[in-house]
Picture (tube, rainbow, N blue to C red):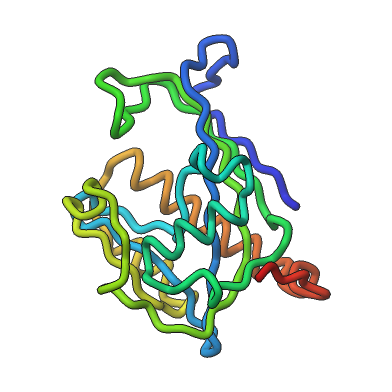
Length: 191
């Protein structure tokens, strides 16, 4: 597993006010297309996944399957994930504007990236979106990995969050495809 730390502002650990743990996945279908999500209201593309919640009790696979099902409507039994992440990304931010905080916070977000497959189509009618996702007009779709870079470049929003998520997607794709044979050989698939 590749581990990457991004700390452009040289944020010190002692000033951190918040630690977040997230899980995301590159989910492919039989045609080699991957799932991407889009928050129209925030102009953000993301890989499916999200924050780990207390109900998941630290189980990253359980958390990731729950998030993918909520965002895509694909039932958990139709989502196969690698048993281990292929990349871990730790990003530090000073004065980060979170959705739930009234004031910006100094925060570190650790995200674990898994690879996976599905044999199902996205079912937008069966999604279980949060109120925030509904307000942001959240959607999910399949896209060829070769088209992702152009799609991200077409997004003209200049927010820090957009730049972070775009970088996350591109790093994840690059890492996965550079090490695809190593990462997928002998995959332990979690049902």
